[in-house]
Image 1: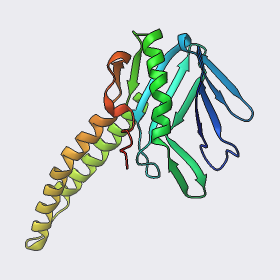
Image 2 (image 1 turned 180 degrees about the horizontal axis):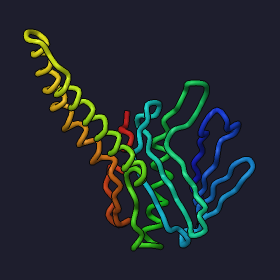
Image 3 (image 1 turned 90 degrees about the vertical axis):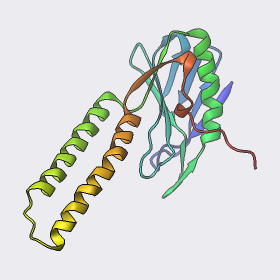
Amino acid sequence: MTEYRRRHSFLDRVERVYRLEADRIIEVRPQKRIEIGYDEIVEFRLCHLPTTEKPNRYMTTIKNRKGECIQFDNMHYRAKGGLEERSQAYRDFVEPLVAELRERQPDLLVRSGGARWYYALRMAEGLGLGLAVIIGILFIPMADGWLSVVGALKVLAVLAIVPLAARWIIKIKPKLYPILNLPARVLPHEAQPA
């Protein structure tokens, strides 16, 4: 039996416990217990979803046919403003889960990246902001002298940001991978020996 513990936020008074047993994964909360059999899993998501507070956040989501969901990441809330990264413990928990699913459901597809709605929202946001910047650069009148140089610098700055934005959009794009051929980027890197 493999076990992983974490506290999601200051609202959780005790740690949530996740257990891998012979035929199921179990999440134990103070008021709730969710059990999902390995053969019942219909959606399995492994992804890197960083946030401002959690720049190295990796998340796992498991759903069954009934719509029950178990979701956990590699971050642990210790105290106010204090998050602890538990990447090695997370990896040690997820790797046996992946191995079990490879054995039981070799045709299972693993989702990676953000949800489709999140991706569409970010695309619309990026396109809208980009369009607003381009309109601002092209249609704001500029006088001769330094202002024309500033306008040219603005255009160069926008052109420099485009490849970065494209890389970010490609990174969060939802993808499907066969469980037998997972890319390394869906799990945190292994801890280096000291």
